Length: 162
Length: 435
Image (cartoon, rainbow over all chains, first blue to last red; front, side, top):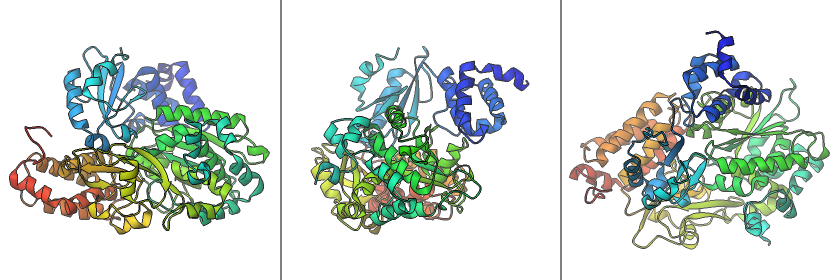
């Protein structure tokens, strides 16, 4: 497909947000990570089609942009559920029992890490230290940091994420 | 002395009782230092004051801040190009939680420190490179940036001078290696965060090939009070040869985990017993990582040491970020090592073979030993890997070197535990099949 066909795959709003980032950078390619995050914010993840459209907009190859996209933990190249649970598996949470909690979480949701529940409600992912180690174990659901997590609290924690 | 003079980083937050925004910040003397620097001092006077203060980088490496700033070619670039000032707010060192707190609670001290730094090196563009997961800190910082812009402390003509400073946040796509300063600069440029060859170092050629300074959040937050109160005051704050205060943290099975701003050089035991409330009932402290996951274990014989750069280094470890992770006697050293190496193997950027191939090998050996499949000779293989992967110069950056620090020290201090796993074919810490 030509650039003309691909760029309309992005919404006007997405293009405007990406162009705003480009405007303060020395070149268009420097906005690669920002652009991927912008599209993900609107669509939940970055599909192959989105990736090609962003690459065209930035004037770089899809392969090069995919090299960037797949390098970073927070850019999803697969669809995710309505909410993403990111459970810390780093050392402070480990010391406070995160490994056991991770197993409980898998049992509770009926999925393994890296999977999405059948009703599309939750995707479960591991994440690196969330920087709240005095309140371990921790997790993040979407943009919310959740501290002092225990298996008893999971039902209450999940309630607001429908 | 007032709270602001004994706790320059956190005192105002304590007085206000929560996050400090512009009105409260200025009521406590905020932006007086930046205004003084920009309107009354020359850039070289600012750099000299920071040099004299003996402020050392709080991100972990401890490089003298003023010296680093002095490496940037002074004055306008001959080609008219820009210089950059960057804050490394990519706090991702496991067990480290101080920068999240600082940005969320005292965002203007970071902005003010960066205004002073930018003026000192002649940078007209400043970036805070922030962890993508730090949503709350980002919103607090964005609010503070808006306030500072509206007040004329950022943007065109800072404090009515002819000094301009464009100030932005870059949210990271997420990868530990972004904490390495040249990898961070590649990420800022929208690329894969692979570390660059050095030299050239960033002060000569950094972001987009321009002179660039990268400092940690806590480092910048120290700068306003140094300009305001002077280098002598700052040096006197430290209890040992190091200067200033340090935000220390403790996580693990203590009664009161948290963060405290204390004179640099406070002893490990005092931090744990006096501030963190000692160990929880039923748990004994066996060892600790003094400053994040990439620092060597310290054990009982070290607990009376001062937490400063030189003392901890002499003990064979590093003060690192100053946030300790405690290993109590319920934790299996082999399994904790496996957890640590899982992290480092996962976060290797994959560029250098010893790191890309060696760390997963180490992780898999540790998993085998932990799960009772260890073989005679495995510890010698781990020793060899520690030696070859960890040696600086065998890899492009210090990721692998940092990864090996907790492993080599675990093999040294907890060797009996490793050997017992292999001899017994099981983890002695697991009872009834549970960890």
